[in-house]
Length: 293
Image 1 (cartoon, rainbow, N blue to C red):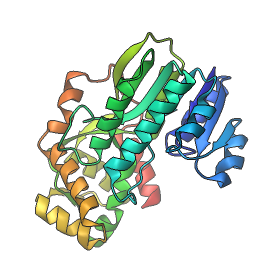
Image 2: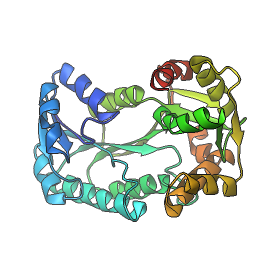
Image 3: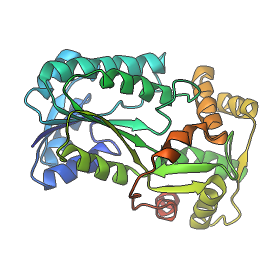
């Protein structure tokens, strides 16, 4: 198959590209950075250098493709993160329709079913809505859990305060996802025969409470008593701003954390849990965390 992978050589797109190439597919990887071309070609893929917000570039790249993996790269520097998601979503929708692509796998997120109260994840909700309008397309939204690597954001807090703290924690249950497991699910969906219409597939590697997650990380880094405390929304907002995060970005983190704490983020996930969980458990990721710590 001729398959397009977006996301350059990111956490998910690189292992996805490797798997697809190993299975004999003709893969084109889109990257906004020309300096990534050599590394992309070294994987046995073709590089297409351009912007995801350029619908004409995308349409030309998508031409003749049998399947497209569409993701929106994080861009916290955007003045309006939600507007950035919308721009990329519109670009995808226009290019996919123009190129006549019939199989699309979109990287989304748990909580993307909700139209408010989820912080950054509202962007995934918006993109899902834009892609849902495409005619004659077999579309799968991969709603992944929280990425394990977000835990790296707590390294400074652990070193400085000896704990993890946010406006969710303790007994709050978190759905975790590892990039390798997401890539495996994406590869499966991209190469699977599918009929026209929209489906949702949740992708999760593990489900643990914040306390259990902290215990696993603590054991791996030699801090067996590591705790994950729950702060108030106000404390979390203040702490993020003190760390140099702009207030409007911090507010999105707080809103997202609150939706984990109050359980709303996982309501649809609980109704449609994956039939098979991923292979990378919290203890497995803890070894990666310890190596970086």
